Length: 325
Image (cartoon, rainbow, N blue to C red; front, side):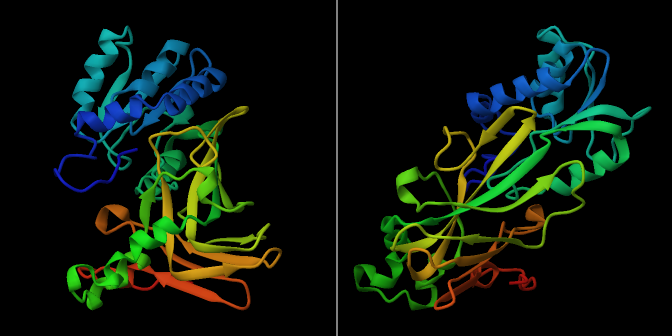
């Protein structure tokens, strides 16, 4: 999963070795995948590693005794092939291909892929992975991960609101009116701790990787606040079941990973009343490679309602349609 960052054009792309280094340094992520592969892959089985990158997951599967096809669409595949050879796995078949161009002589028993972006949808690999599953996974085959759960919490740390409203305070005596309110209408990648969010959190839905057919149009949930507070936005993250008994999470209460959470700010604080349910609707980004990773979100407790579609806030927006909130 590549980070999305500004600055040097290659930074955060799959062609930047630092991107792969950051993922490999994520011991929580890499060790969990290694454990899951050992749990579900059997000697002699056929395995696809989709979006193989440096080939690490393919190597894990080959060490179990599987026959592995590793699919990587970037030129990193050249390095991955040599890495596998040097690591004692010369039999891995590396394919410089994507979900459309990959060809195989038959179905496979397991598909493993580290395809998730921040809060799952920050990249555009879900639909390609679904296509690979439809075409190549044998009946009764296994997906790693097997399920993704989306979760959400209210952000109670006022510092994020203060940061987002900086331009509204006329810094340097300058009126930034045309853009002053936009930072509080645009999502941000953050890494928050438990003390910065309210309890409890709520579920936004699950993706069963055996059954899902497309990116959900809408994620919905209900929060039941435990205490009165001021909320400054929503925090979204995912938890993954890689294999039975093997999980990893990216929320504020989980060990840190290279994944970050997505902060969906409120343009004005939401005054939360203990025990008063808050209904949430979140439209995740789609086709991220063709446009910004834009979200839309709404929260209502019956007395107050907040709705944001961040596509409306991008000055250089392509003019795509509104999200269905």
